[in-house]
Image (cartoon, rainbow, N blue to C red):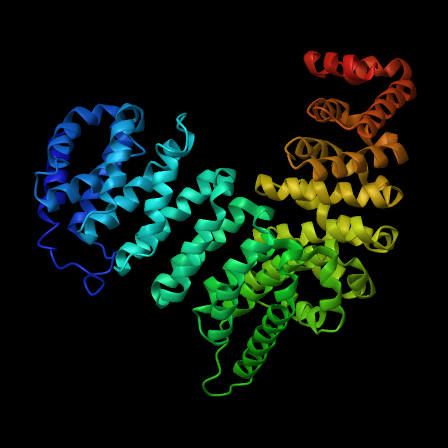
Amino acid sequence: MRTTGTCICLLFSSSGDQDNWDESDEDVSDWNLRKCSAATLDTLATVYKDDLLPFVLPILQKSLDAKQPWQHQEAAILALGAIAEGCFGGIEKHLPQLVPYLITLLKHPRPLIRSITCWTLSRYAKWVIKAKQDDEKYFKPLMAQLLQRVCDKNKKVQEAACSAFATIEEEAQERLLPYLEPILRNLTYALHRYQAKNMLVLYDAIGTLAEAVGPALNRKELIKILMPPLIKRWNEVNDNDRGIFPLLECLTSVAQALRTGFLPFAQPVFNRSLKIIRNTLLEQQRARQGHIGAEADKEFIVCSLDLLSGLAEGLGGAIESLIGNSQCLMLLFECAKDQDADVRQSAFALLGDLARACIGHIKPHLDKFVPMAAANINPTHISVCNNSSWALGEIALHVGAPIGKYIPGLMQRLIPLIKSTAPPHLLENAAITLGRLGLVCPEMVAPHLKLFAKEWCRHLVSILEPKEREHAFRGLCSVIHKNPGGIVNSIPQLMYAIASYHQPSEHMARMFHTILTGLKKALGPKWGEAVSSCDKQVYQVLVQRYRI
């Protein structure tokens, strides 16, 4: 265990003489002896947990004293952050004293102290958020001081504060709602001051805020604070500047949160996203033709497609007017057949979002998009397969009966997938898509039921999202109604799946009752044999709920 003392000593010694530390010094991400020591201490804490504290705490208590050299204080703060996860159980009782003290250090005259304190406080963010005391003691002072550091004169402190504040946002969620205006004022003030490198973490902090609070951001007074400087940055960045990627990601989250509040800004953002996609595809074509200097960076396409998905999700039906007078669907089809898996992944995500938002524009092009999506139901590329399967389910749900003519081909793809050993989330998505196909065209899915009933029931159990869960189970019941014989050899799996559905809607409960009582009646004397291998507790649950 002597290694522990060595690691902390190295933290002290490698802080060095940083009296004049500023943005011109080594990058915060550089790997050095000091950071290697902190990483080792983190690993020791993970392995030995609270058993490490008797060796560490005395050194930290001595070094955190304000009378100690500032380099020792800084090393102790770094060490305190390094042991946050592994030793949390033992350190928690000290946090009511440590956290307020660390918050005061955010005003320390030394930039390195301010910077490392931001990081260490972010490591204890969960405790701050969940502390039973009111906001005035921990949460509000921490936010206020971090926001001040976001606007710090030192660039490294700005970066650390933005990163720490993003962590607070992720943990705090709705706790942020009363403070949205001051938060936005500080973050947008930074938009006017930051240079290229720190702009990346600032975009992340703004995007994380949008994801954390969602539609609560859609208030006129908040939009007035946030959007003008964000759109100003959008207009200043060139189309071929890789610095646009984090801005595209940020705007994606903002568009999803603002919903129709983003509408006044949607047209130019939509048009420019299509322009970036079109130009990148043209550059790709030139590169294939052997033009000297031609090189296509596919990330421009991926980020632009994701932003269009954010617009579709946020604006909903209001995006129809944008789609109708554009080349969006033509460009989307080109992206859906791209060789790059990341491009196809984002393309099928957008296809699904557009199916939800404006199926009228997708419907005339089913002959192009449905076979293309079906061809990508291949677990070789998991994310592409997942998104193409999901998009097909969304198309089926919103287009209805016209999906029927494609179902034989879709079943040839979906049945092998759901019977495979693909990752659970992929199998769950396949179960949802099969359910949606069964919901709108049960007579087309029913003849295949016997081939995949066991696996379908098994993977329905893991669906958690309420709407997707109901769609999938309603599809199952509709298919069984058309072909009861297809489920006879899978009665135990069916019963377990239905029993797993807690608090079904009234309509769903009636469907379960109809299916179960119908099967019991149809099987007659064979019912007992069919349910004999069913878990007794599961069977009793169904007897009580559905009176079978």
